[in-house]
Image (tube, one colour):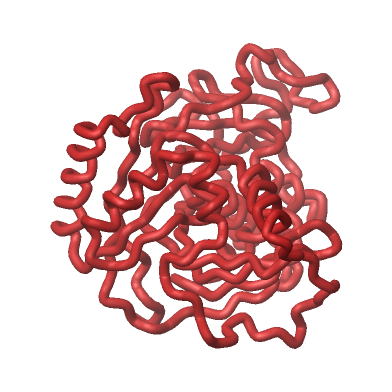
Length: 351
């Protein structure tokens, strides 16, 4: 057991934050405030980050934990992370600028840290200094919602332990300010239709014959803002305007038919332009998966659906073998390696 776990009292026990995949994603337009209206069917998958929060003393090793004292040693704050992180890698930080030994620094812009800061600003809870430790298993900047899930899970756990818990409406407001996907992770739904900028969430309750998923990432991160920028350029070049009128979504149904097919993603063209190897991987994955395949979020993770675990595992082995044979299992310039994971979707509600 790491030394800090013996030394610091546990505030929030290891909470599991699940990944998600977008079974379809449509960009409806660009709102006046610069946000995009989206329509997506999202489902949680059994790939988890683990979040732990520890109470800290007011002083640690003689150093002040007051943020006004300035940042921690910049040598201990990497500016970027290798993607994906190995399963079980630790990222740690706190609002008090203290970090765990042998762990990468989360940074104040990390969504889980921002969620804790936002909750504390509204409620004053927790009042004591704390340290956040995240055991990362969900690749970063991969379209799997890891940061949003960490933030949503943080808010939910804080609210459950608070003596003056916020209403779900109040909690949802904090979540919306953090990001469009965060409210989805506040909900108990296994899957849901999501529309707007996170306001409209309607549970998906239909059964699917596909329960297992093969996730594939080329080992690179795609910046969401860059993907959307490329998408907008493509639309403008085609003479299509993305601008929408201001819309509160109060009278909008998130599930107006006809519904997009599973696997449709309006960001696919922009994502594969920024990461061309995605097209090769997608063709290979599509030849191996009996169910739909697609891009999750803005990428660069692809998914393929299977009816049983053994079929998904065989496809994983075949994909890795073919990718290696055809020269895109590893990028010779960057050293990025193909990452794959076989896991399952969350079961439909009521099952």
